[in-house]
Image 1 (cartoon, helix red, strand yellow):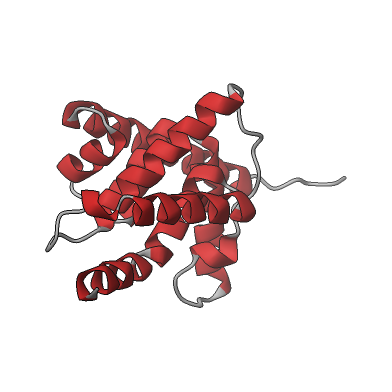
Image 2 (spheres, helix red, strand yellow):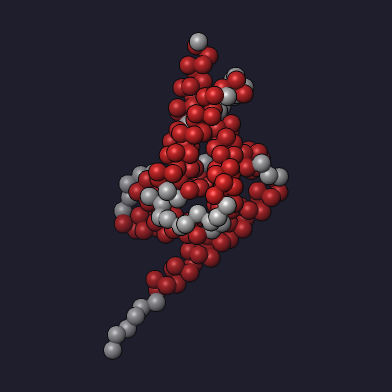
Length: 173
């Protein structure tokens, strides 16, 4: 079937974005890859739910987010903090200053709550509109905007704190 081949190709084209979002959610490359695989499997099983002519991006992100929430409910405990693969988070090679800044942002992003992190990544990194991101997360747009605002505020505070710590010099006598 030509239509199914086109749909599968469109899904494959979204894999890098799905992987980036999964890594931001889970903070573990292996678990993120598993989430992407589970999401694609579910999408392929439910290919008829995708409306022909639409970009599959929002549909795939919604599937992934629902699977992520299901995993959280199964575990019923906080996921231990682990480092993001900072090299994978950087889109292009850069000088040391840019790498350090990107690393600081990734580390700060790891420290904020999962709900605010998911909202920030969908809007700021993946480029979804507030309405699309709210739809993906299954929350009202106002709640999403609040999470994004609180997440940005929390990121600023964490990054300002890191800058202050760097500026303090230890003097040995």
